[in-house]
Image 1 (cartoon, rainbow over the protein chains, first blue to last red):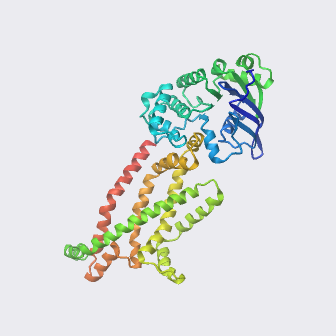
Image 2: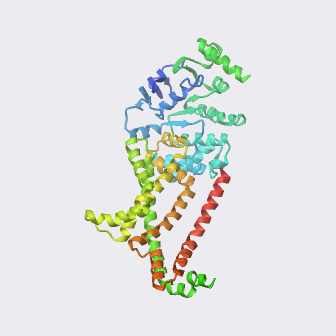
Image 3: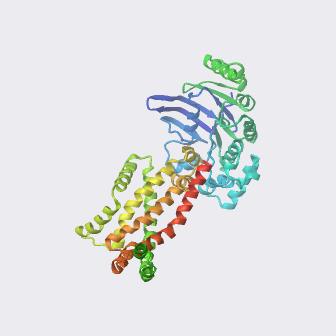
Amino acid sequence: MSAPQPLPTLEITALEKRFGDTQVLRSIDLKVANGELVFVIGPSGSGKSTMLRCCNRLEEPTSGAIHVNGKPMLGITRRDLDRMRLQVGMVFQGFFLYPHLSVLKNVTLAQRKALKRPAAEADARALEMLDKVGLKHKASAMPGELSGGQQQRVAIARALALDPKVMLFDEPTSALDPELVGSVLKVMRDLREGGMTMIVVSHEMQFAREAADRVVFMDGGVIVEQGTPSEIFGNPRSERLRAFLSRVSGEAA
Amino acid sequence: MDTIINAFFNIDIMRQAAPLLLKGAWVTLQLCAVVIVLGISGGLTLGLLASSKNAAVRLPAFLFIDFFRAIPPLILLILIYAGLPFIGIRVPPFVAVCIAFLLNNSAYFAEIFRSGIKSVSRGQTEAARASGLSPAQTQAFVILPQAVRNVLPDLLSNVVEIVKLTSIASVVSLTELLYSANMARAVTYNSSPLVMAALMYLVVLWPLVRVISRFQRGLSISS
């Protein structure tokens, strides 16, 4: 377990989410410390993506609280929410680059319109971030001309350019061809080494073993078990986690 | 054969009618400029309302769209022109036409914009909102540019329909192209001015129609 921090970068408290009669999340508590990489695993339908999407309120929590650097994400005005969202970067399974804008414009749009950065500064920041993900030379390309892996790296650069306090990754490599997964994971590894706070929902167990500070196992809308990668993968305590891990390794074999 | 040429393709008569028809064409052009701008503005507003998550906003917009798509525009025009004086509002023909076209075209344009907005994936909105863009910024910079691109052929087709439809303004004595041609026909007892008017529509609209089908081919190849 990581040492207790005075102010977690992200704090989820008693989070509940219901869709109609279906309870998707049940009393979720999670604290993510500054610079920590928390990896979330679990079977599909376990609520891990929903939990992630509640963190920036793409999904509206039914009850509970979310705090980023001690500031609430819930019960605030829409304007304040827009401002808070700048601090929470999100990377989607489907990339969702803006297809009508060049790579550079994709990375500058929110900088210009939401952060109100001057054009020159936004361009410079965008190029810096594109360089970080190894795609500076594609700045003038259109998203449709890029491979999936390249698109996802641009999406990461787009989120990073807003200087978020925490980055959320929602199955960032699940839509990629196997040979393109590595380039995205490498960018994520670099980010972690740079001290970025990250929550990653993914099935890349190998990456979790190598890069995660903490692994959280969710099933049926609750956090069943959490611990260091070696605890979770080497010494699973719950029957549900053991069953999940053997299923996953069975698929990989 | 001679009688047909004489009655429909009489060059002398066309030459005599030309000044009148050109004047009419100018009115048609002005009318088009106004009603197309009105229709697109109204349609965009209505299309956004009809795409709202809020049912209290969406349903009235749908009702409006359905209603004015179902009413024949010619009847609408006559009702407005002949009906408004009964409630104490007397409007010149040009204004009556503008009102009728605003109501009718907005409904058609709204339906096109709405389907365009619907064609943009939900993920685009989520990515934009997650990056701190407001709902209005998300519409303006992310959704609408893609929506318009997706329905550009439909928007242009509708423009062609509107240009042709402006000829119904002749029933309220607006001296646009058809009215002028019909006047020339009555004076000369000859239908050549009508043919000439049709040719004038053709000259303007043919290139536009070509552009549209090129767009549609382009789209079907890329998709």
